Image 1 (cartoon, rainbow, N blue to C red):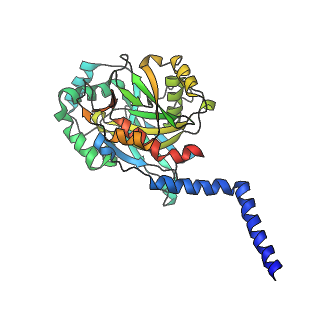
Image 2 (image 1 turned 30 degrees about the vertical axis):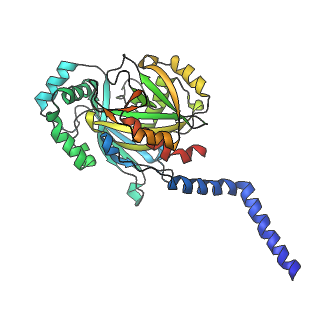
Length: 344
């Protein structure tokens, strides 16, 4: 009997060992990591930095290209905005100028996956002009009261606001992270339109309007992030891992769609900086640096004081001896929240 029981016990132990050595280890470690990272979550309300959430994803419920449907409304058919006096907006657009064909958010149906219809995220975008984005910035700096109705609508119900949003743009904040868990940061040059000399966590790219003369030029969130990595940093797809979209909302000072994306780098950080110096948009950044993705670093950003903006729509924060755009906090929070996925 004893030998029989020992045989059963040995078989059980062997099955556990086999399971762990043939994939169970990965599954077990994932569970342990997810539990630990959940217990070390950092509380943060993005509204403190004028960022209003439409939806967010998580390491347990990630967005994928297959779960994203994007539709575009032409500039001649786009919804009428209801929040800014049209003549005031047009005057600001004419005064500040600017060229470029961009898009803005007009609707989002969230993929909460609780029914057949909500298995995918549906994003509706409308065509706009970059001069309209500059016009909003001009009004924010000179006549902010004119944006009061739009600001109140965003704060009250951001998804409802989108149905008749003020034409603006969509930007993705892409956060490259090394295998040693260091985060790329960039200092903006004098060649950009705003936040000159300030630092960003990761890099930014604005979604462009599709070109009817160029097949396949239509962009969605994923192709935007990939283009941003190529144009801003000179990175090719094999040099970074899966693009993980973590957050979607509105940055209220510019009434702009704001996306956060995390990527794990497959090349050394010195190679990243070398690529960036040779990229199409190298003129946009003066220098680069790396900060460790540690809780203490994140906490120092969360505790950083605001500073008066220097002709910039939105606030700046002082962390160490550098001024950072206020979106830097959300970028680090999202990188921290998704760090579990960087191991997988």
